[in-house]
Image 1 (cartoon, one colour):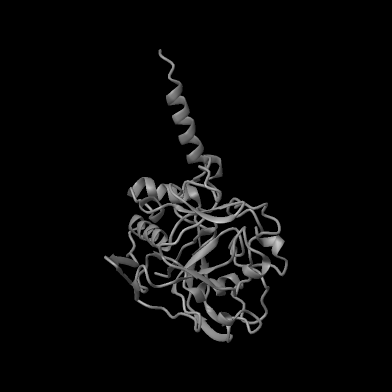
Image 2 (tube, rainbow, N blue to C red; image 1 turned 180 degrees about the vertical axis):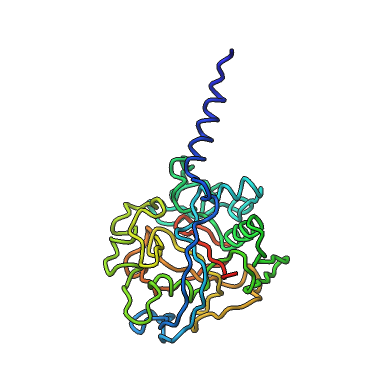
Length: 297
């Protein structure tokens, strides 16, 4: 019998990867969020958080954690999809001078641009664009036999927001879930008034992302709604008003998309549950990830 070290290494690598995906975990673990009304926004926040206004949210499902590298790799391996970073000019990484664009960096890499070890595949996937996240949602939907939400048509995207498939959370759903579904009294951060209890942020993350779900969950059982990685939302961004549900999201390269939650690289103010920011849908960097949601069947 001939001993083949290459096969041993390959088998060990596969074993390590599979050990990160427990039964059923190639698809995100979804939690039912019971709907209700709440005051969205913050009168003492930034200009784009005002004015606070009452919003009604219907029941929906939201993933317990941000999508991990292991889960995203399952999509890549099955669909053969190439991300915007892979077909473009890489992604932004963090170094001593700040954020710099580096060719060849993609979802396989850390926030610093180092090829990630398999043992780190429990971390939220980074360097993924809004487009990549929407394609991941479509793959989950097809895999589960559900109707896809995102229909890419050249430079225009049509979204069937009534479909039962996976999608990115609406902005109002995201804030409602981050606030534990409470109508009035809410913590500044998702699950606690003390950010260190629930989040990896600039004050405790040691300048790096951490494994999904390592901090305390909020009252709905959701992890990392504050900090660790910014999360793409479904909506277009409007600095002067909150976005509304829309079926036509417009030109892929010209319409900003909402981001929520803050990251390992942000201070506490930027990690507040009402804080809003935005990027173009093909943007990617080392502190930006996503989680998924879907309608009730």
